[in-house]
Length: 464
Image (tube, rainbow, N blue to C red):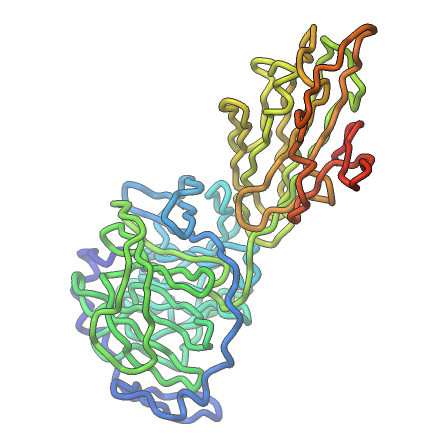
C-alpha cells in the first residue's frame, strides 16, 4: 500500500508474476484464478452477510518527507495527526482494534519487521522480526498491504511478488496464503474483509496504472471486479470501503460488483488531501463490528447552594471504555451558567487533547487509547450581585461516535445560588427552562424533584 514509485523496485515488477493456477494446501485442492464469470459455487461458498456496523474512523499513514498517522472521519475531516518514526508499507488494527500494526518499507534483503504502534502518539511500542517466505522475497520484502483477519492472522502482500502471505503477529512467522494475485500483478493496496465474507484485494500491474480490484472468495478463488485510481491503502467503515489513492485522494467506493469486470469502479472523492499515502486501516477491516466507545461524566465543587461571589470548579471526565482508540469529543453548554456567573480567565485545563471556550460553549476534542482518560476542569465565579435566575445548569454532550454519559443524568450539573434577604425573585414565566428539563434522549440529566406535571425540578448539584 505504499507508494510503488520506488526506483529500486521497478526492475523486479515484471519478474513478480505467478501463474493463474493456485496450488492449495489442505483438503480444498486446486482452485483457479477466475478471470471470467464467477462460478456458481463461489456464491454458495460466500459467508452469510453480516449486519452493517456503525461508522468508525479511518486511519492512514503517510511516508517519505511527511511521515504521519492521521485519523479521518468518513467525510474526510482529519480528527488527529501525529508523527511516525519510519515508513510503513501498511498499517492494520487487530480484530478487536486494541493493537495497531505496521510493517517497515521496503525492509532490507532477508529482513522485515512487524511493529506495534500507539495510535494516539505514533510511537512504536514493540517490534517483531518477520521470518519465513515473506522475509525471503527478493530483492527486498517490500511489504505492501496488511490487514487482520477475524482469527487474528495478518493478510499481507509484497510489491516484489504476486504471492499473498499470512503473518502470525504472535511469532512473526509468515506462510503462503492459498491465493496469489494473477500473473503480472503484485500487491500495492490492501485486503478488506467485506460484509458478504469475500476479501477485497487491491493490486498493481506497474507504477502508474489504475489498481485492479479483486474479490477473494471463501473457497479461495479470485476474480477481478474492476479498477480504481492507483491505491496504496484501504479501510472499511459501516460496510463502505474507502481507498487512499497515490495522489492523496480519499475515495469512497460506491459500487462493489460480484461478477468479473475490468471496468473502472464508481468512486466518490470525499477529500483531496495531497498527501503521500502509504497505507490505511480501520478497526472494522477484519470483518468484526468494532466501534469506538467513551463516556463523559460531569461534577462540580462545591455542590451548592453557593453564595454570590463564590468560585465553582467544574470537572469533566472523558474515559475510553472500548478496545480501539477513540476520538472522544464533547461540548459543554454554559449559557445557563454565565447568566449568573463569570468564567474565570485562565482556569480552563485539560490533561490531554484540546479544550476551548467560544461564546457560551466549551469544546474538548482528543484521542484516547483504550482505557485512557482525559480530565477537563474550569472555574466560574458567581456574580455579586447575581442578576440571573439564581440557578446554574449546564449539560455536557458527547459529540463523536460511540460517546455516552457515564451514568443516567451524569452529564448535567445544577447548582442553586442563595438569595439574599429581601431579594425579589427575578424569574419570569418560562425563564429557567434548562437543558436537563428536556426529554431524555439517551443522555443523562440532573437529579432533582418533580413538579406537578412530573417534570424534573433540579435544586441541588448533580453529576458524577
